Amino acid sequence: MNKYLPYQKLLLFLFASLLLVSCNTNVPPITKDGKHYIRIDSTIGFSQELEKAIEPYRKQIKAKMGRVIGYSDIDLLKGRPESYLTNFVGDIILHEGILIAKDRKLPVPVMSVINTKGLRFPIKKGPVTVESIYRLMPFENKLVIMVLNGEEMQKLFDHMADFGGESLAGATFGIKDDKPVNIRIADRPFKPSKKYTIIVPDYISHGGERYYMLKDVKERYDTGVLIREAIIHGIEELTKENKHITSTLDKRVYHVN
Image 1: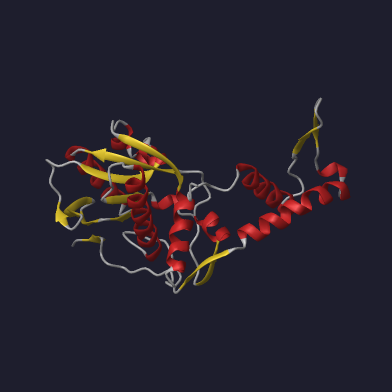
Image 2: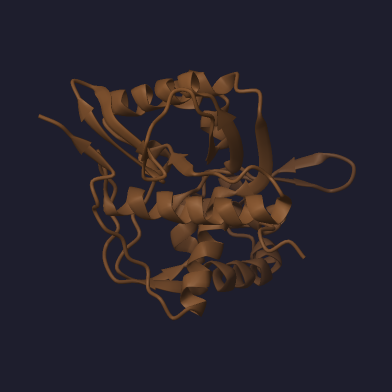
């Protein structure tokens, strides 16, 4: 059984639909009666029949989204060049990526990169629910393992430095005049002659957010694992070990005067 299987797409669709119905009665959902489409909009008013049909799904979704998967000791907020949130996500994705790679006999990543803009909501101190992670990562982005040569890695760090920092783990670097300096990967100085395996969202693997250097990388492995499912699994594993969610600022990305 695949422990990384996402919730059924139908459930996600119903969750989104219920949010729309609850928050905006002007949104016109569409139903199908088998022969033609019937548009249901705000002009028909309250429908007891529709509410009755939705109620069982609403209860299921509330139960699933409200499930507590862990506990955070601190507020994990987003920022650059590093932050509690970006460091936590980078660490957990690298950890999960290593597990995925070993399980599937793929090249094992030594570094993770997650586009900081894709992290849309902080993780608050206290109980962390499934809904918390859906808010953090609302997109259907999946993890991709890639093998980069030295030139591609240099361009990757150039881009992250130009961005002012990014969510990553397994590497450190300084930023001076918008350029990367003192690059270290797996606690060793970066060597342009080497190849490095990284794990990233499919969005930036295809050149999103100007990560053009990743677009043409030949050696890549689509894991099919949703980023939020990897985060959920990682938090659940922490909880099984009686550990809380926490993070540190360790100068993995830092400014140089």
